[in-house]
Image 1: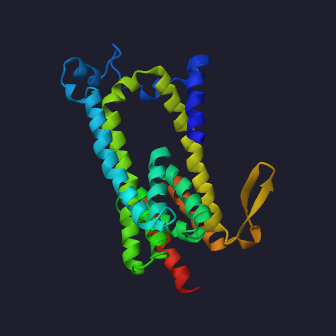
Image 2: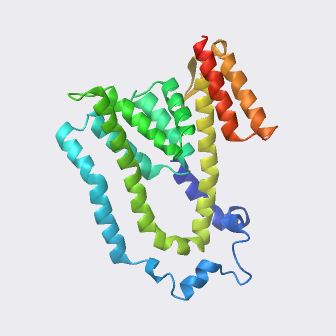
Length: 290
């Protein structure tokens, strides 16, 4: 809903105040003096005709991609029922792949709250552990979703062994997370150049980008609450609730490490990898002597 509202706001702003909502300033320097960049000239020369939008190609992508993505979900629903952990994993991460914008950090805000509060697959501290594990390993950060899928299936294995169920849960999570993304890539790539020169689309995307910054900030706040404080409580309002820390449960050791890491990177410009290595070593020492 946030992203949808931001897109609508951008479209309205394009008409009411185009100077504030025009996203073309983000691409300054990419255009030549006549307003056309290298890609435009390549299109004009026919060199990129193979990515010209074609309805037949779009239909093939939808049919083949949809079968590869939704076929396993339908099979799981038939074999295990709509309430099984397998169907829950498949439908939840499929929906996540469809409606989340802004990269891994924006996705994790949505996943963390749903996996912990809605489904109960993980505890807050475990989600923080998964993020820390993903940050210290090679590969895309979004693969932390495998960790979520593994624990969800591991704790509800049914007739399978917990480890086998966990591995299958991680595999299913990966498949339904990335399959829809490839559909959108192949389906939307031929239209990217047309959208790039569309002022309304540019304004909508500019507003969505601003909204994603807020989503990422929400993720940072969520993890800060559950890493720095052992307990939280909910402050209730008529329109909802806000999670706040129990100040007496502050973990001063985690707070000191967090502040030191922030100072090392922002004030002393120390690289991320050395900071991660030192913080990991400090964490191991604290656990060993706790």
